[in-house]
Image (cartoon, rainbow, N blue to C red; front, side, top):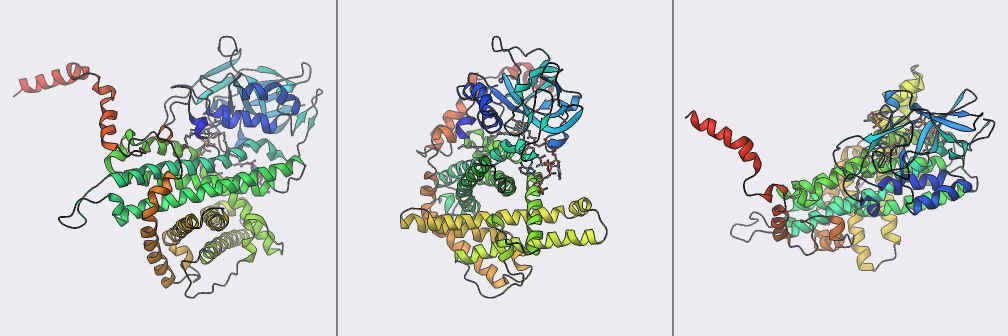
Length: 572
Ligand SMILES: CCCCCCCC/C=C\CCCCCCCCCC(=O)SCCNC(=O)CCNC(=O)[C@H](O)C(C)(C)COP(=O)(O)OP(=O)(O)OC[C@H]1O[C@@H](n2cnc3c(N)ncnc32)[C@H](O)[C@@H]1OP(=O)(O)O
Ligand SMILES: Cc1cc2nc3c(=O)[nH]c(=O)nc-3n(C[C@H](O)[C@H](O)[C@H](O)COP(=O)(O)OP(=O)(O)OC[C@H]3O[C@@H](n4cnc5c(N)ncnc54)[C@H](O)[C@@H]3O)c2cc1C
């Protein structure tokens, strides 16, 4: 993703060509269609956008208004934007860069609607890049960040495309207009599941970047007096600075390992699906949606913690942190808004809980839901033991899933419709789903540090980082663990003091841990995070290049300040 994010220059961007348009052809086109478009896309002989979101709908895909109506007399689909709100809005590259787009539209044939499907539409001439007939294109204007990408809009005025331009790997429309059902209607959403999975690594990389910048800068920056008369210490010597940065550093490793699992799961489950076994699709969707939501939200917050930990220079674009925050903030909304995605995971958990209650043995990432005992066994736990920490997170998640599901059952027993009961419990459901994903990340982190093939000294450092991540989670969410007495106040105090010990333990390895991300200065794009640590000279050079410094007296003085000053002086 990092490579794909390198735009070709201001105002255009082919990020989405690589991460959405091309994978959609790979995942949703027939072999015949791949022969026609895949190599063109891979060789960038065409540039594409993934045009799904509209001005009026992004989350609710079944509510999209763009239509693709099949005309059997010409064997064509007619793509149309019937309303203003059906205007495609947000797709990266759509405004000025792309000459093709996969357009998600409601498929109509023989007068019946079959829901959202993907269609390949050429939107600009390959000769002069002008919009094709019937296509209106433009950029949606400046955004919070990523202004190198021309997120655009598109309107279609009865644009005709050949029947063969419907991506027909799963569903098909025959020449006479007969619709052939796919194995699952959700296969049309497969690219979103794939992309959500890649966001976990994007989040890990973003948090790794931010912690690299902040940790390195915290070793360069000296400030205040820890002891009167002594030299100003590195700000990383302050426990509060360690408490800000090291949990984010640990999370970056946790998410990096979670993305390994996500990638492996996606490959294995989609491999089975290629052979017709759809059984893993629901778990894949729930895991990718939950991990995307959880990791991007923690990352965006974590980057801002890193920014604030760098003081004023963190607020400067010289640090690279504001841009990183803006990008990570986008990941919380794009590819499935985080709240909605976590609710999808909650929906899966409630379903699995009901199956477990009916006696079914659960497997995969929800197996613990049927294994965890409801009755807490309080007692002095060893809060430095990874097994103890993993069990605590799983107990917390199981308790919260059970509580949310039982609340919902209770609402329905009072006569509420399922949908109303769902809505009135959705805050509980979100918290339960977050606890579930958090427990998965902790378990996966612990299993990875115990099995990854590394030198034992490295394993010791990673184990400390995993303990730090887990203890931080327990102390930050102490109420969840205390609620049914599973952990006691003494356990929480033990967790806090062990966390302090872990901060001190990680300190000597902090720079090595961020250097291990191996993020080149050209990727970090941060004066504060430079590998050579020469911050101040380069901060001065960076500032001198500011456009405002092109002239000693800026033209605004003569236009505004000088007359203003003159008139004020004349009144004295
Ligand atoms: C060192 C480098 C540093 C890197 C730094 C990185 C920083 C970042 C920098 C810049 C970032 C800039 C941005 C980057 C690119 C952005 C790319 C964004 C692209 C897009 O946004 S594309 C558009 C994305 N849009 C969406 O995701 C839409 C979300 N909505 C949906 O997916 C669906 O509408 C829904 C899932 C919410 C609901 O679907 P619906 O059909 O209504 O289904 P339900 O009724 O809810 O459920 C029914 C049933 O279906 C199951 N189900 C739903 N979806 C799926 C699925 N995908 N797969 C399988 N099953 C699915 C659901 O579970 C239900 O099952 P059940 O009935 O319970 O058994
Ligand atoms: C940087 C960026 C790049 C993008 N690139 C693309 C792209 O290339 N292609 C593309 O097609 N799209 C793209 N998008 C659009 C993106 O996919 C949508 O913005 C996203 O899906 C959210 O939809 P929305 O904007 O309509 O928000 P809405 O769905 O309107 O959400 C608004 C609020 O309503 C809440 N809400 C909505 N539904 C529910 C619900 N069921 N339960 C509870 N709360 C709910 C949400 O939680 C949210 O807080 C991009 C967006 C951004 C920011």
